[in-house]
Each structure stands twice: as structure tokens, then as C-alpha cells.
Length: 535
Ligand code: SGN
Ligand code: CA
Image (cartoon, rainbow, N blue to C red; front, top):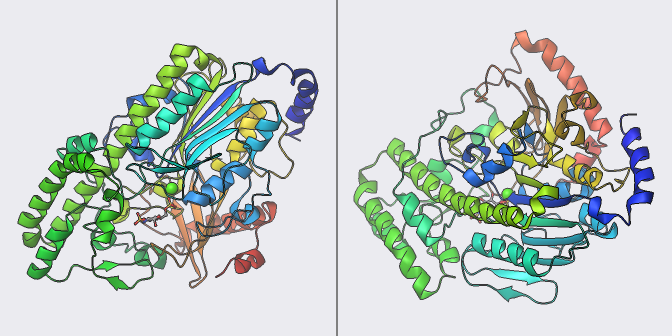
């Protein structure tokens, strides 16, 4: 019933409004890749200050319980574009093919008269549909001198990827924008995706910094299930010295003689000796001038490693790797923040900001050492939640926050409603417009559904689905285990203790199990479907 009013209203409105394009808002959708909310100062300023990204929150609404339906890159993007859960849109993991005969929301915008464009990382395997202009990175893309796939031709652009994606976006605004049409711009960063290569300047700047460790850096998973214990995303045991910490291959070979136990665990669980390839893959693209700039910091890292690593115990190695990780990860974010500032400045200078909805989000969250981890995938908070802030002048009250459980699944319907375009009946999200307008009476979702599939695969996070409310999280791990977990999100925010077997929570378990069952029916997920996705 709740949906009837906007549909009726907008179908009436549509007929009188399609020619009246100037009344429709523009949309600037900014998404980065693997950006943890812990690394945005609007959420938490212990690690980094992000004054430009924060501008969106200060002038709009910050969501404290925004989350994804499936915490991994390409599936999250498929959910965003289709407004449907992974088991419906078919892109359950990074390997699955996306069936591009499906409707995506940019196609609907294009049809409704919007000018549409996309620059940066899509990571889909297909070119985007419904965008008038695009230049996208192939697959994961490269940080240095990246190649782009274009509508007409592919091109390699020299420089640092975050600056380039911004230049492309600004150039489109300045030279290609049709002033008679509203726009939908998808400005999609590759950063801060692994292996976290900063620009040479930020690399040097952040190498000098030291960052606070999270409380659970040395988690031994004693209060958790098999999935947490067997995941291969621990900074000490799975992060790689060359590929991630950027220690020179020659140094590693030398250290090998000192202590020959440096091995890496691969995604499939087998052990691998380090090879130079891991280091040179991103760096190999740099030209001689760029290499010289990187060399200054790379030499410092290797010198430190050579001098100190042989003397370190495991605890010290963990601490050392955590600092190296944060220095590079946060350096890439600092570039994202500078560049978001350039785009926001342009919107302001051109006056476009007045009628533009600006969204900042990430395809999912990320572990910054919590539970000893990097990467994502799990329903546990750091990867389940994602940053989200939305600014919309005259509609959203500046500086407001929302605690509601909202998902990446909701974006398509939100943008469509904002643009007064009718959303297809089979989209599965909820428009966030009532929340944006401060009308929480017209919002009645109290829990969300989650389902992660990519297993067995890199990082070995087991398959699971679950239900999450503001208070609790109930999870079922399946495939090669059959384990349930329950977390009390208010009493145990770091999710250290699985209380599924605790008799005090029996009623909660019963209630949530029933709710989860109903949710799987509502979203058309089922055991049969789970089995059909097993490879
Ligand atoms: C690469 C990364 C993984 C990461 C996946 C998926 N390894 O395989 O750490 O989990 O991508 O990331 S790397 O050695 O290539 O950096 S995703 O964002 O595309 O889902
Ligand atoms: Ca990602």
C-alpha cells in the first residue's frame, strides 16, 4: 500500500512532466571501491581526515546503518544497477556472468530524457548499457597509467587513476554536458582497492605516518565460528610482503636466506613462495620518471624491512604490516578525497549544485585490521556496512543522520523516484525518499537480508546468508559447514562473541529464524536456488 501513493502521483506527474526536464534533479553518484567507513572522518576521524567527502554529509544526510546485500565488488554493482538481490540478477559472485538483457536504472534514466555518463571502475565484464558516454577500466583496472575501454575506442591515459577518472568526469561536465537535459553521472573510483598503490606524492607523505590499531587486531577468533577461523584474510598470515607491503623482490630474496619461512597462502589454501610478479604487476606500468618518484619511498620500506624484519616476532610483524597497510590504503583515500573536492567545487562554481543530488558510497565496506583482517565478504559489520551520505539541497536537512537499515539495493528505486521515473515492479528495494525528507513514518523496514556466495575462492570466506536488524544479526553458514551465529549488535558491537547457543537468547533466535525464513520467501531466495549456485 505504501508504494501506491508515489506511483499514482508520479504517473500523473510524468505525463505532465516529461517535457519539463529542467525541473528534474541531476544525480551525481560517487562510488569508490572497498572504502571502509572507518576511513571517512564524517564517521570516524581516528585514521584520516576526509574534509571533502565530509562536505556531502555536512550538507546532507549521513547513514550509520547503510549496508550491502552481498559484500563483494561486481555483485554489489549488479545489485545497485538492477535494484535486485544477487540470486535474482544472477551475478552472485565476481566470476558469474551478468546477463545484460536485464534492465538497469541508467537505461530508464536515458529513456526518460536524462543525459547519462559513467567514468571509472565498473568491473562487470560487460560494457554499461544506458549511458551516453563512458570510459571504464577493464576489470579491476590499474592504478598507474591505466587503460580505459571506451564507447568508440580503448585508450591508455598517463598518470594516476584517481586523478584521471576525475579529469574525465570534469571534462565531461565542461565540454559534453547538454544544458537542456538533467544528468546522471556515475563517477566510480578504483581506489582504495588492493594492492593500494598511492600516487608517488601521497605514498611519500603517508609513509611517515603512524596509525592507531583497532582493538581486535590480535583476535584469535575464540568466540567465533569456523568461518572466521578459516578465512584467509589475516594481515599477519595472508597479506603479502611484496604485493601488499611493497617490499622489493630483491630484499625478499635476501631475507629468504635469513629466515626461509616466508610463504604466502593462496586463495585455494596452497602455499606459494613469493615471486617478483606480485610486486611488479602494478609498478611495472610506471614509466622511468614515475618509478624514480616511487623509488624514494620504496627504498625506505625495503631498508626498514631488511634491518628490522629478521628481529621481529609475530606480534611485531603484525604491527609492522598493519602500519604499511594503513599508510598505503589511507594514502589512496586521501587522493579520492582531494578529487571529490575538485568535483564538488566545480558543481558549486557552475551553480549545478543547487539542483544536484550527490551520493557518496562504496561497493562495500572493508576490514582495516579489525579481527586481524583485510578484505571484506562477511556479514560482520566492517564489510556488511558501507559508507553512505546523500546531499540534496532543499529536500534533505543539512547535517542530519539516519540510523535506519538501508541497502545498496535501494539506490535504483530512490534515484528513479527522485527523477520521477516509474520503477519496474520487480525491483526489490525501497525508495529512501521518505528518509531523505525526514518522514520516517513512511519507512517501516526493520531488518535486511544478506547473502554471500563466492566460495571456495580467494580469501576463503564461507558462504552464508542472514538477517540483520539494528539490534541483532543472525547468520547461517552453509555449503561445507552448517553453522549458525547470533550477535548482539548493541552489547557486542565488535562482534567478538557468537551467542547463538546462549539460552538467554533463545527467544531472539526463534523469532529471527522465523523472520529470516519469511524474508527468504519475500525476496524469492530458497535452498533450491542456493544449490543451483554451487560450483
Ligand atoms: C583481487 C584481490 C583480492 C580481492 C579480490 C576481489 N587480490 O583478487 O584481495 O578480494 O580482488 O575484490 S589482488 O592480489 O588482486 O589484489 S573485488 O573488489 O573485486 O571484489
Ligand atoms: Ca570492492
